[in-house]
Image (cartoon, rainbow, N blue to C red; front, side, top):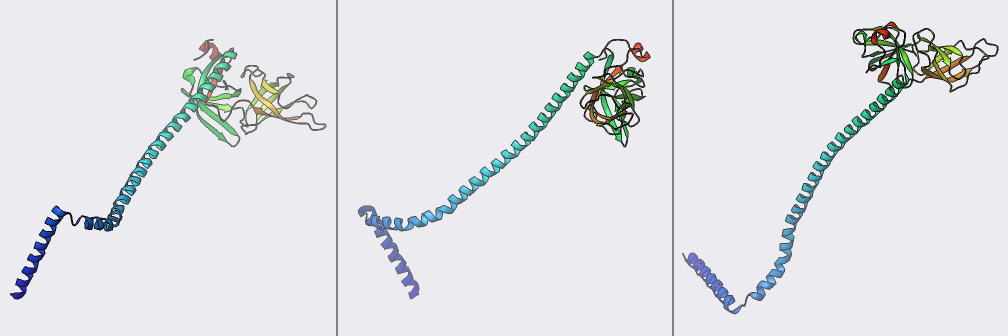
Length: 282
């Protein structure tokens, strides 16, 4: 009981002292200097205690900005891919328009009726070169009909179906085309070699003047190809001393692997051309 009474007296004493100090500070300002000193001592602790919060705010702001930048970057990457695809499509359309203009220019130069045909498929095997176009018997296509592109002769129709036709290319090892050297008028036969970039010119005499780069055109002999269509350019001339003929190779002027649109030509005088009429096909 004595200990408890002593505890209560001490508590009451401290309480009275605190009240006196509060009253004295309020009226006399005794504790202002002490508070100022304590504030100086406490300031570093306040600064240090506040830094983690600032750092967290800075880090949170950085992470938020980085996330926004990443999202914006991803959006820009998607837009870039979309624009690249559109540009590729635009370039493809420009190239296609150019090819169509070249075909139109070729058709204007031709007197025969022509019809634009589009590539369906191409089969290039060992020695055999075929392609299929989207025109057939319902479009008056006939066997043996010439096919050209904007550069020159491609081949002739081998098989005709109702809606498509198979074309034998001039580079096929089985194909032979009567031609003339445009500069001299010397006749020869352009034979396929099984290579898309090479023809062999046969039956040119050993004393004939043949030069690399000169143009080879269709002769019109045989009745299948009209006269004067570009076929190839001489790429190699080899003379054999004492030989009856010289060896001549030529490169087709038609774009064998790149063309996707062609012209089917109705040769004047062919029954199918007569049935189809004389105007230019559309």
